[in-house]
Length: 160
Image (cartoon, rainbow, N blue to C red; front, side, top):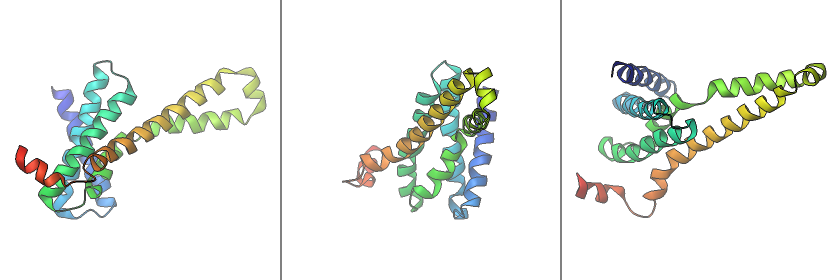
C-alpha cells in the first residue's frame, strides 16, 4: 500500500511540475496532479500484476482522458489544460533514450557487424516507444471522442 501511495505522490508532483511549465491556471493545478497521480498509479498497479506496459499505459491514459472530461465541467476549464500534464508522467523516456542510443551504435558499421543483436534491440525499443506514444494519444482522445456529439455534462448530471 505504501508503494502505491508513494507512486501517486511522486506522479502528482511531476504532473504539477509540468502543469506549471505549461502555464496551467493555478486554480486547476491540483486537478492535473490528481489525474497524473491516479493515472500513473493505475499503470503501476497493472504493471505489478504482470499486465504488459502497453495495455497498462492505455488504461492509465483512458482514465485520465475520461475523468479529465468529467473534471473539466466541475472546474470550468478545457480538459487539455490538465490532461496533457497528467499524461506526461507516462512518457516512455527511457525506451526512447535506449532507441536513440542504439541508433547511434548502429551507425558504427564495425559495431553493427560484431553485435548484430543491437539492430534487433534498437528496433524493439523504437517500436515500443512508438506504441506507448500512440497509447498516450489514444487514451487522452477517447473521452473527447466518446462525448463529441453530445455534452457529457448532461450525462454525468444524471449519474452524480
